[in-house]
Length: 326
Image 1 (cartoon, rainbow, N blue to C red):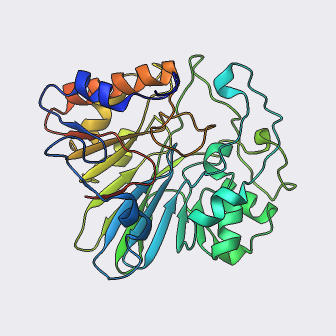
Image 2 (cartoon, rainbow, N blue to C red; image 1 turned 135 degrees about the vertical axis):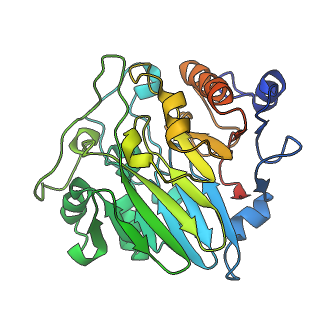
């Protein structure tokens, strides 16, 4: 029997799988918009062969993308320690820690690491992963200065602002200036930027939002995929992207007006929409993902809003570690 906090995925699919947009997870629904590999394939997808492309969700807005034998990471936060956030006792002085027993077995390589913003649930593990793999870190100027604070060499840190289109041969990365989500008070946790190298961060409040980016990866001969790390955006910055797949952050509150309709229109109604940042990111990466009651409602609301605004889009609710092939 599932933990009461766990997301009952099959029940949700049974209750929600109506209307024009199909909802699927790991191939549970016929006609799924993406092909999901089994666990063994997920662990090895992209390890060889230039044509293999897979996308694996690592919780929150984290992804591993394997393009042949090359790997790109987006917001890889795997340590997932307790700050009290999901228990109503949030402690902003929670020490920053990296669970190497979780991170190291999952991260064998990384060519590029794309950081949407520098809150701990997005950036915490990035310096360790960059040091371990030699991966290049792309992010805001805040991410650059925080990387220096962790001892990463400047040559491994690539500050970007939005508008850059970066060519890596088999794929390109377009950087998009974006916005962080707003809480119920129309504000956010730990606002601010780092305009110079700070002391090495020690607690989660030492990692501010630091401005927010989104990214679009276009695979040569494959899909174009848009990645969000927070649930707000600037419509003008999305015009012309028209991704095949959009990784869409679940809304943190109703503070952002018409979030889903404006987003779907700005992205030209993607073929596939994948909700992210709806799980409890202070629990282990085991399936089914644990989701708090409020976040479950937000996920359901997001799916309903996508159906209404973009009825031709299909919705894929991801599971951890599963390799999806779009």
